[in-house]
Length: 335
Ligand code: FAD
Ligand code: EPU
Image 1 (cartoon, helix red, strand yellow):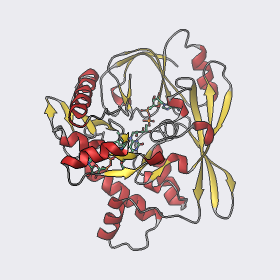
Image 2: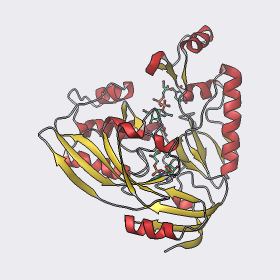
Image 3: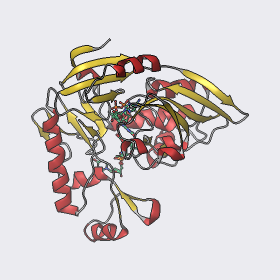
Image 4: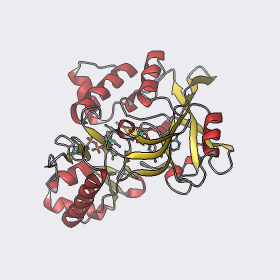
């Protein structure tokens, strides 16, 4: 059923008050098909958990929220289990279920907000793992034809916070299910410095997937604001990937700064560090600002407007550009 003039505050983790002219949820492909038959000429927004979106104005169209559920084992070998998951499942609930069943591969991605269906959109990643590492395929509904298409790992053109669905196939598909390859014999990935430190603190030498999940949850909770308390959408910007000569330039003025090897001889810098050096960390402007523990996260303390936060992001981009000659790119989807 399509509702009119719905407040989206509860549907975006920034907690921005905007209205959707029309709003509906769907929990099956049939319901999705029927909703889209009533789309008419309206613009369309597909919503999962709303944890990677900044609304800067009312949405003058149809918002459809994915609530397709499901968790099905579609293949199993001695070492692996292939699980097909409904796109409307909550990502972290899926992770916890995997830990409970002793299926490995997603533990480093614990506590990322949002839906399973959005996980391939930007190839979610954290603490040394990206979704592309465990992704087999997804099913997606083509909006203009109503056909279901299957995309394998290569088809998705995954990159750092990128996929084909943000580029050449933007706004063309609704992802309805994702199939992941999970392990029964686990490959523990504790290389990320913060995880190693947390395990040492806990006195753990042989970590299980549950230990990794618990550690990641502890690390994240210690520095990322909980959207239930402070509105935010995680990292607002991507970490910039630059040529080595830029690193040399920065090294002239700073003895130590975080940087990591990236593909094709490039280097990934920490946007949080750049923003902190530019003096923005913890800055508050009335009811919004830059988080005090993580400069990459912009926050809405209460009732701020999306365009105020967007303007702040523009000022940050300008100031980092002036100081370091690097142009930060927004990671959050701006509507
Ligand atoms: P939404 O915000 O609802 O949508 C995001 C985009 O995907 C929109 O363009 C939307 O139209 C589209 N979309 C959503 N579902 C579908 C679908 N089924 N079919 C087609 N298009 C769809 N991200 C990381 O990668 N790593 C992190 O560590 C991380 N940490 C975070 C921490 C916090 C506190 C927060 C608030 C966010 C964090 N994020 C992180 C960002 C966010 O959690 C992810 O991008 C997540 O995958 C978004 O899921 P969602 O369902 O909320 O997507
Ligand atoms: N740093 C600072 N100041 C800050 C923030 C960070 O100096 O205010 C430095 C840290 O000290 C560290 C480095 O920057 O040396 C990296 O920081 P952190 O480990 O917190 O990770 P990040 O690069 O800021 C990325 C992702 C996160 C993901 C974490 C963990 C992006 C854009 N962000 O953050 O993803 O959870 O790594 O893997 O790649 C998200 O996408 O929303 C998100 C939260």
